Amino acid sequence: MASFRFLHAADIHLDSPLRGLAGQEGSAAERIRAATREAFEQLVTLAIAEEVAFLIIAGDLYDGDWRDYRTGLFFAAQMGRLNEAGIPAFVLHGNHDAESQITRRLSLPGNVRVFGARAPETFVLEEIGVALHGQSFRRRDERDNLVPGYPDPLDCDLNIGVLHTGLGGMGGHENYAPCGLSDLVAKGYDYWALGHVHQFQVLHEHPHVVFPGNLQGRHIRETGAKGAVLATVRDGVLAELAAVPVDVVRWSLVPVPLSPDARVADAVAQIRAALEQAVDRQADGRLLACRIELRGRTAAHDQLLAAEDHLLAEARSAALGLGVDAAWIEKVVVATRPDRDAADQAARSDALGELQRMLGEAHADGDLLERLGADPGQMLQRLPHAVRAEIERDSILNAALEGDQRALVAAVLPHLLARLTTEAD
Picture 1 (cartoon, rainbow, N blue to C red):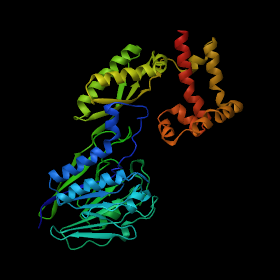
Picture 2 (cartoon, rainbow, N blue to C red; picture 1 turned 45 degrees about the vertical axis):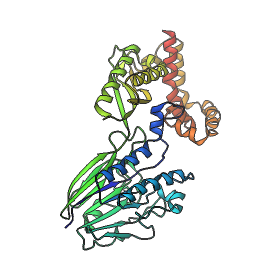
Picture 3 (cartoon, one colour; picture 1 turned 135 degrees about the horizontal axis):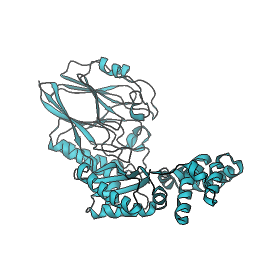
Picture 4 (cartoon, rainbow, N blue to C red; picture 1 turned 90 degrees about the vertical axis):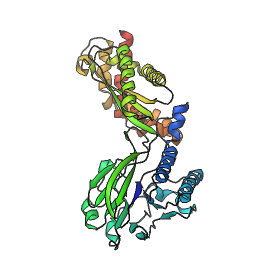
């Protein structure tokens, strides 16, 4: 019986556009733009250094219908490195790959073996007693349970099933190639190399059912360490699993709690302290991409809302002060609450109270809502796709883009009142 190691990765999303970079310059922004490629290079370097027997990529190598072949050529070059080291790669196409012209047309080095899409396919490595079974997606929205069509396990030391699946819609992911954990366990394989869910999870042991997570976090919903799974087989039996990070940029949501009597200057000081602590505890030597979130009930709520641009500049200054490529600030979110509620504000007898009452009733003003839909919404719809993709980070602009006028009024109200209140004070 053979002893060896193999790597299981998924959801590479090569050259996927990372969000929050519009208009950003500097070495940190460039590092983030190149992060998916650099992380994949790290994966290949790890495979060679660990002398693995093979690499599995369980779907979503690419990120849609790329027309620029440089993405595919980069992948081919990395597979060439594996080829020189005598390491085969087994690739399954997932929902994003199913859209890609590169997937269908680009020739790859001979060590790359791609699972077919018409029916499940099996590759056997006789020298180490391994059989790998898998089926690529034929279309993006694969809605069939593919597991029943997978073949019975072969008479090998290790049978590995490779599958891209939502497994019931885990983690809010689209439930492509739906199946149940019981379907996988009952198949009789020793290891299921899954893809699609972007968080490392071992769902079952003996047989092992594993999501490695995505290789590189791409936005604030993909925080923490990202990488692949290194599996060790001893005497034909799966003995160890280890999550190995290969990400080069790590995303983090950094909470900054504020006291009731905090001022804007106090918030700036707290941001600096929280950012330094996050880099020290979470970065692990990588660039930390951060979203700062101010929290708590505070009398400075209105001033903080009015000072968002200033807070963002201060946060980015603090990040630069930590050293080259230590941290990068995507956004500062003022999620504090005022020390008085909206009813108290609306009860004021001055102009601000009247404005609060008027805007509070705006959701029922048909003429106003119609004008909001006709003006900013139409203007934003004419923006280029790349620009509109950035808008979803801003609740106000996104509400205008989506034509949700009631949400637009609700989002604008606290900012408008904050600015007016601050000026009045």
